[in-house]
Image 1 (tube, rainbow, N blue to C red):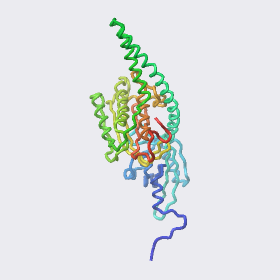
Image 2: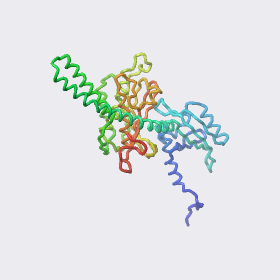
Image 3: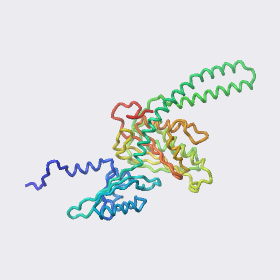
Image 4: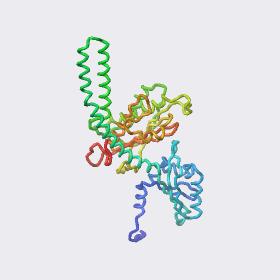
Length: 386
């Protein structure tokens, strides 16, 4: 005779409940009466940058900066009433940046043989801010890019005539001094044409194929170490379990190398009086996996995350707001085109570049889908184009 407990109509099986929790994009944890973690779904593991086996011995106290949050959790357990906390500061292991979050704590009724437990749902506000920023940047970038393309075409049209006239004039001149002037005109015309070509961007379609992301990172590391020598230490922090990504190798090298060179230049140009200069100049190349992450309107179960981190002076808030706009730079020798081009390349890959910075730490994050798009790729995201 079967001993299976009958299930009421409409009751969701336990296996389905577990699957729902595993696929939620909201970070969800279950704590015991001592605020120790009993369960964390993949979104919570991602947010706390810690796997469930390492979370279980810990209390949530190790992840909150303020005592108010911990007191509110204890009060929720004691009063058995739900509580929502706004704008709490959450620490991420190994990072000084942390995250601003809202969370809701709900007491769970004790079952037979179990004590009181707490269900905690955490909503990161930083990601919402980034999403709003992405939308506004996308709109502004589209308008700016159309303007830049129009300007580039208008610049290139007369340059051919100027260069040709200077060449003809040089042939008619006998004076070496005057020919030196025409050479300057020709060289400057070439420089402006190259700048206009960079503003227009590459017209070559990406050569997508399965590639090992660590081969790209190692190529960048070798180039960067050769360029900077002993002045900067380049460290590796790779996740060897990452699968291959769907990308163009050369374009991905260009993106990561641009970010790494920017970091190196910031470190080399740092003023001696900068307090963070007391530490050796350092760049970290890091690879990780992201779970349940949304780019634009596309939600990805898994993403490849590449981080380029430096311990330089940081980027000011005002500059961060326009960092990916064309012609925006804080360096005297910079063109302000490297980051916009890198962002456009990542948009062609269905990915994204993000930046977080404070004095002593700047972190660029490159997000790359593992899987190719389900529909024929036109070189754009569903809501974005280079």
